[in-house]
Amino acid sequence: MINKNTFSQVVRSITKADHGLRDPQLIHPSREWGIGLTVALLLFIAGTVWSVQIYQTFKSATVQDISLTEGETVVYRASLVEAALTAYDERVATHTQFLKNIELDSALMVPTEGDTTADVLQTEVEQSIFDEAILAPEELASTTEEMVTGE
Image (cartoon, rainbow, N blue to C red):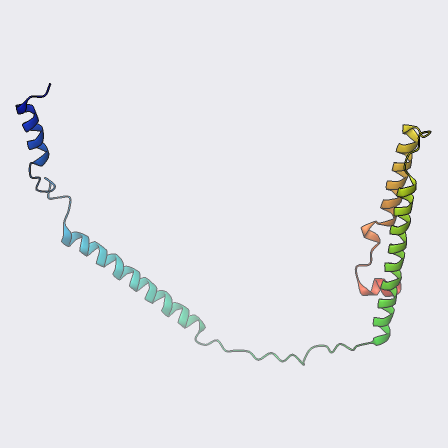
């Protein structure tokens, strides 16, 4: 058990006045302020030098006036536009018809009781080949000239 003497020693060690760090070499306010101000001054000088250098680089730059009328003039040809729109409408109609045919074919391909697994698989393979042939992305026109000329 703790007696009165040990308890008073613990309290005295806790409450005893501590006058800061024992080694005065750790903290020097004048040294810390000197280092801080020196770093701030160096940053200010570096920013000033960089700003002057950027200014000297761009002080003789001029704004160039680019006229938009000097370029090649595009002539609107209504006949070419109409031909392209007509070709596009024909392709849309063809594509829509192919999609309707595919939907009808897939609805008719429901296996019946008499079909064997081999017949169903062969029909599915034929359908996938048909789909790839019709809906191949390389068949789509990538430019207006291809749509008009059909090449």
